[in-house]
Image 1 (tube, rainbow, N blue to C red):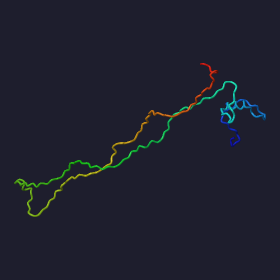
Image 2: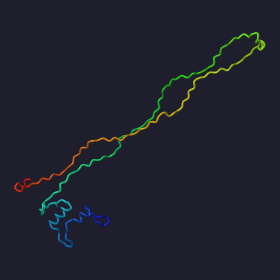
Image 3: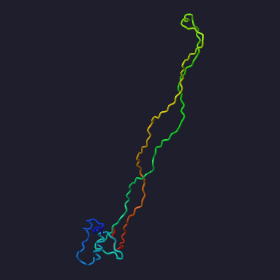
Length: 181
């Protein structure tokens, strides 16, 4: 019985409608033949304590067996990771550098240039600016390659071993009643 007062049975409408008819409106209990028909129709086992009933017509049993249904289920199988780490390495290279070198040049003044040169005795100082380059190191960060993970789905056959049960039906027929087929 359901909480809302309905009766629920584990059979569909067609099975219930095709059940053997039972006389309604009587207080009489069902006979053994009627009970056997109902038990057979609803595929219920025989009532405990009662011997099997002999039914009119050809006797029959239903043979059953298990069938194997094989499928797949996905489950986690680990993780793949990309990790970056920093290493330091020495790099050697060379760069051309320039510098000024000074040399002292003594040049006699000729008779023709004497008028243009000024003569004077005394202390004097002159300067010349000198240049020299030195290596300068600057670092910059530049992207050089993209590294990523990709995955491919691979399908392979994998054997499945399982046990299934099935019923065998044996007939115990006396030799005299046996047909030779």
